[in-house]
Length: 173
Image (cartoon, rainbow, N blue to C red; front, side):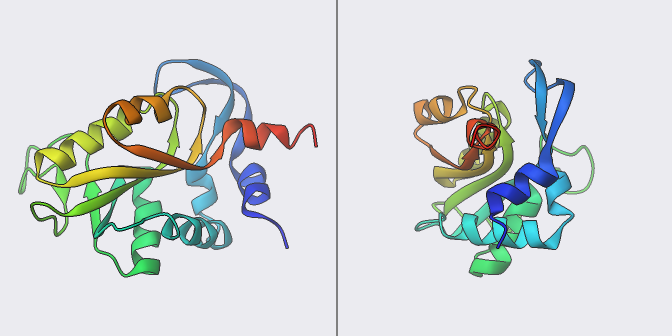
């Protein structure tokens, strides 16, 4: 059976010249969203994320990349889904967090890829501003760019399913 690591490498790893959301240049791009289009990949990601939700009462996904991960994990675990927007809407309810969030709710945040952790930190702060307790986050691929440390500084344990190093090490083994 093909491993999730092999599936992600096959479906999501791109080589070339890329600018990351952090502004950094890279010759490797991890497009986990491309992997989500394959139900085999999304289902396996959901299983792995679901094993790491701990005592959470809800799963939150960051827009856009974390929403499919969180949705799939929500379906797998039966936990409510929360969606964290990048910013408040200027129409409708103007909510930054969508879903049944209540004060004191323990929430795990899901993301597709992290480098510095900036987007994930923004989501954690938004959830906390709304009364959530956020102490853990799960990411499909961490690019080893300081996200684990940045989140730890905010009291959040970030657990990657894989690091970019894990995926690149497959070249050598």
